[in-house]
Length: 360
View 1 (cartoon, rainbow, N blue to C red):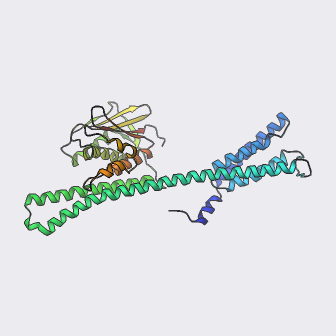
View 2 (cartoon, rainbow, N blue to C red):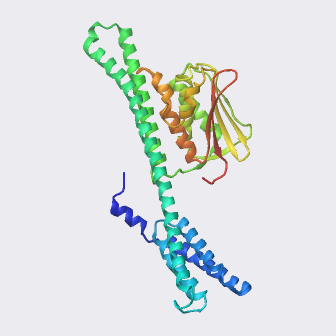
View 3 (cartoon, rainbow, N blue to C red):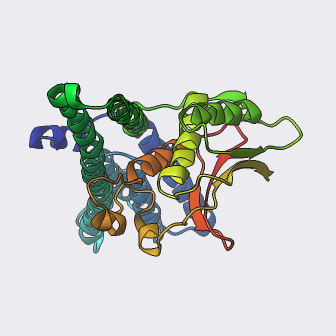
């Protein structure tokens, strides 16, 4: 939601204890350095540059225009009143004194303003990227939700209109299809809730130390419940490996990747889940022997907007963008990384890492 103009101005000139202490710290540092320069070097020519540098750093480290502008005025005062002859007085009758005072003031204010504007432009760019991601996510979700809802509507309409004419096998098939699509919708809603949680302003991942064997085992168990005919092999380190994570979210990542291998990799055999320790990280890999990843899909594989694939999909197919977008959000929120590759022997592999340390 865009901020109103009064709210934006309030934020640009808002007070904060953090901004006050940052300004005080840099101005004190500049004053100390100016005093040393004056004592050791005996001249005040370079002192204005110290305070302009302080104003630049203050503008960079604080929010809005207020502290940079105030620091500019304070810096000009200190340079011209404390560190410039005549000391502790203003004397605009001296040659060059008015020009030095005005140039210092203008340079400081302009530096503060430009630094703040650059920060604001960067924030606008970040917000634009977020809006683009939301739009792409909405488009992907709209496509993915329409397909199962249409299937459920068709199955239930056939049962309601022609139940007496349908053979028992046909009725069971329609009910099974509606049941499968309803389950898939539940998974989609879970993914959307996770996306909302990851992107919320107050989002925070609660990590606990979890045994990797238990997390992988639980994810594979849930997957086998939905796909009993698909074989999955698991390889984990022999030594107990404890990883700080949100266990439910990491299980969801593994489930999404396993289901993606079946639905889009067209792989019914050869699914492998591997975990290994790489330095300070644990790397999870979900691989298959399916059809692999199309080259035109790689660019948008994890952003929820698979242009190349979606243009070729019919309404009866579901894109994998939303699931992988959820996986990426969860892994990034844990401080990890995610990537994918096509395997030389065929099929694809999805890798993600989780840090073994407690830091996010």
